[in-house]
Image (cartoon, rainbow, N blue to C red; front, side, top):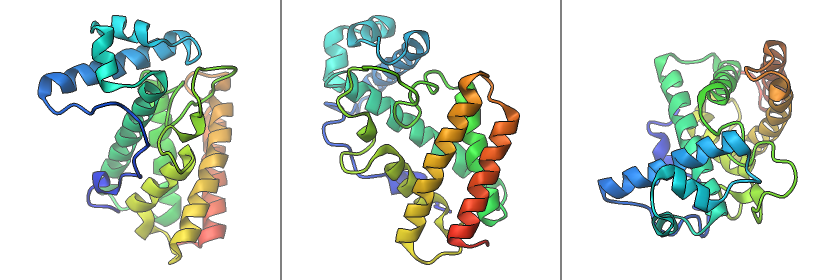
Length: 225
């Protein structure tokens, strides 16, 4: 596993945010804006979200919001990026607590941490590492590229997961590993959306099936280890 997940950031998304804060006070405002965005997503969804309401909820002038974010799309992109950073940190912590049993162990931990965030992190049900389940117009130009200008969201996540746990997989072909992880993410997305569609805590049987599906696919595609 990676010694520090922060050293394996995906390539930056072009135009995502006007200015990243440096001073502590600005950092606090930046995080407060993202917290407000996440809370409003839970209340009204991505389609109804406006920068004006986010600024009001965060108790900052609208001009302050636009110092950090060019608009709604950049705001959602920043939240997706923060979610991914938190997810990888949580997963890395779990990996460090004990070496998982190869592909199967890594898969189980990855699914468990995603499910835990789905249950507990504000806004994660609407924006996990991209727009999670938006229906209809959202005001976002291209929701497939919130994390990266070149890669789609799952492609960017696959690279970060590869950097974090790549040594746990048997394959020595980085391209094959990237492809395998991307396909696994697409499959897991579909099953977990189904698991949470009618149950806010996630259907345990479908979550278990998600783990089994991804374990079997990666073991066959990349080889057990």
